[in-house]
Length: 119
Image (cartoon, rainbow, N blue to C red; front, side, top):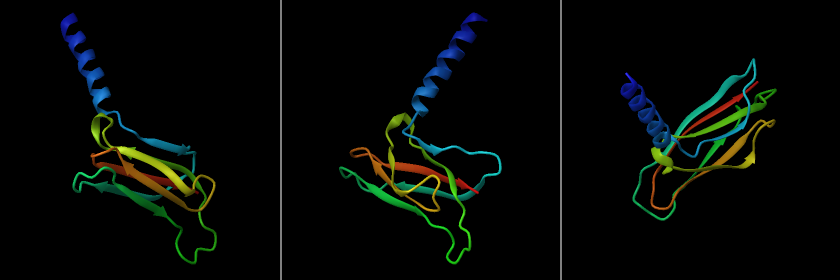
């Protein structure tokens, strides 16, 4: 019984290390928030030194009172920390828009799940 428990602990520890990526979070979700935008951004093209992409969330054109962003999540879906980095270029939390720059590590691919919450 001890060996099974020991093997299970080792397996779970290794799994957590392999899944860990360069995910980023800005702000916090609070009660009453709703999902404003959800996007998958990926780049699996040829191996070049650095790949990058721009993600933009803009409120609907003509909206009388655009929602205020309370949380932004950029989750790295590439295992073992080989994905990429996310950074805010403009806008962000407590504003109505956001622009993110997603960049890969050298000669790697990236795959991000972007979620923007607000009210």
